[in-house]
Image (tube, rainbow, N blue to C red; front, side, top):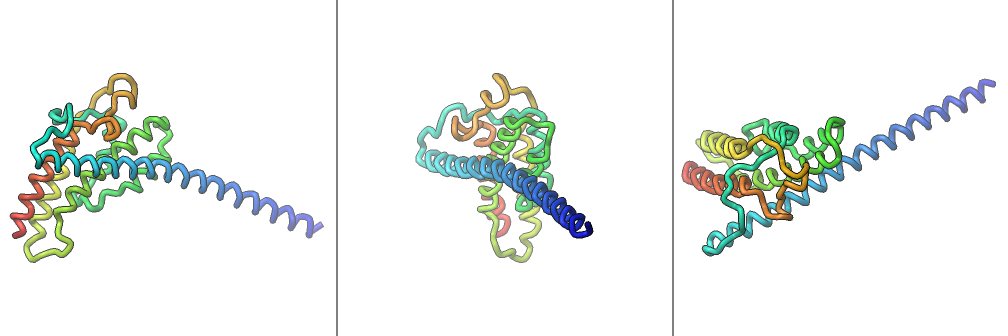
Length: 204
C-alpha cells in the first residue's frame, strides 16, 4: 500500500514538472517570437539608416514621405516605448525585457504585440546609431558630455512621437522599414547625427 502511494506521489510530481516545463517552453517561444520580430526590424532599420545616410551624402533623394518630423503611435504602443526609454542612460535600454513584458501582457492582441515589437526594433536601431558616437574608453571630463548627449538623444526620440489613432486598423496604417520608414524616425536619426557630432566636439 505504501509503495502504491509512493508511486502515485512520484507520478503527480512528474506530471506537475511536465506542466511547468511546457508552460516555460511556451513562454520562451513567445518571447523568442517577439524578440525575433524586434531584431529583424532592428537589422532592417539599421540598413535603411545606413543607405539613407549614403544617399544623403551623395546628394540623391533617399525616399519619399521623409519630411514628416513626428511618428504617430497608439497609446498602448506609446506606453511601451516610454517603458523602453525609461532611462537617460540609453545603453541600458533593454529590448529583451520589453519582449518579456509583451509576452505577459494579456491586454494586447497578438497583432498589437507584433506592432510593439516592430516599433521597438526601429528605436533599438536608433539607439545603436547613437551609441556609435560614444567612446568605449571614458576620457577624463567626458561624463558631463555623455550625460548631455544621452539626454538629447532620449528627448529627441520622445519629442518626435505623438499619440493618436492609426487609420485603417492597427498594422495597415503602420510603415516600418519594409514599407518605407516612418518620417519621424528619419527625423530622429538626423538629429542624432547632429548631436553625435556635438558630443565628439565636446569630448575633443
